[in-house]
Image 1 (cartoon, rainbow, N blue to C red):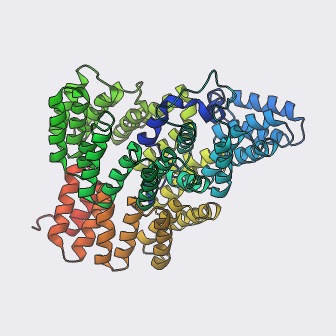
Image 2: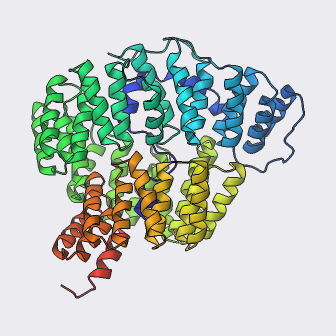
Image 3: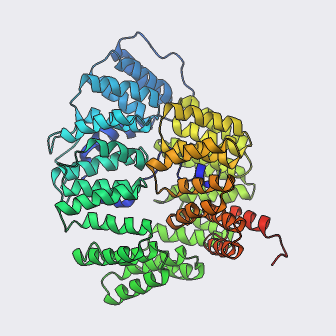
Length: 599
């Protein structure tokens, strides 16, 4: 699936480190309610065959015993549904356990019914409210999530959560309300898309009474949700309350970068460095790199290296900079030095394996990935190793890498199922990928992530009508979800279907995520499909400036080519290929428009 559909269009996204790192020291708040029993639950959630005899009239306490047995047998669906049935007749403790089981089993219908019961029995309980908000966001029930977030924010500072062993650690330089919001945000981002979290949180926080810290965090979240204008707005409010807010100024730098305002981005980065020399030491280098001014970023890092204070971190960033710029020889040299020096980490070995793969040395890459199979980077290493093995038609060994990991980490089964389905589809086994998703849907009924990925694979299999139908059904259940609006709009546009409607869907997505590169790419592509080549160029160039994605570059170059700017198109493709030498979409576009032998 092309960028406007598949990239950045998952139902949830990973957490960016900028938000998580700010609350790393005080993660105990809310994690008790969301994670206290997940590990115990996940041990049994193997996806084994389930019993269809979920009780409907048994005593709730007896039902919980049956549910726990189902968990031990690996029958997560029966456990979640049995607990949900028990919760409807049980007390707060049963409703709580039912909610946690439903959530950890990724059985969202059961989790939703259970947590609604828990919240009804304990309307002021912040644990209940936190889990309720989490499930509501996973289902894209924004108003319900917003209401529950309000309950969490009203909880007394320092209030204990069941399962905590001691007082929550303090977050340096943060007020209790700031820390509470930061912790809540980090927890919600683990389960839901940043745009959805921002939409819910921004409607739950009173900006007139919010602290500078809370406003700065909302600004950062707006940026994560691809809304630069609102990020600037909240950062501006934070700076009115506290002109020396490091967090707010940092957001302003990133906002300027996203807008392409180089002068203000660089000037504000220098202010951030002066404001807090310790935290802001790399602000200017990061800004240059984000602006794709790699030589200036390198010069700034060399300057910092000369100070001798942050040598190891400078070396790491120089290696990443070389990798980012496509200078793989330099990147390999630097990562090799890092991997064999003091402070070596698994990440350096992973980069070296990636470089070997990009250079075509698949055996060295495979050896590197296998070396990391039981490391902290086991998931990406095993996934990439499996892809290489599938290329070699060593299917059994490839799938064993994934299956063995799941056996050892049953709590990761759900995400690894999605990974496995896409691995199979990527290597010519789309039907097998679809069958795997169908089996997963039996364990996790109506799960939006599974349904979305099914739509992706259906489109790749040429079953466009079924793909569109799946996305339309999902959108009815998740009204206004910008991710799905974009996915459906792009799919229609890419297949020259209902172009006017497709553009309308994408415009609705842009209204919520105006700076999302995938959605900007979709808008450019639908304008291209409608024959507005020059109009497409503006959207596509902006999208590529935000995310140097090869498929966006392919679209941008094609729009330039069709508008008569062939030389500019060649430059775009050449630069993108330097960054992504293995990109099939770039190679296909280039060869289609510039056949071999044509100058």
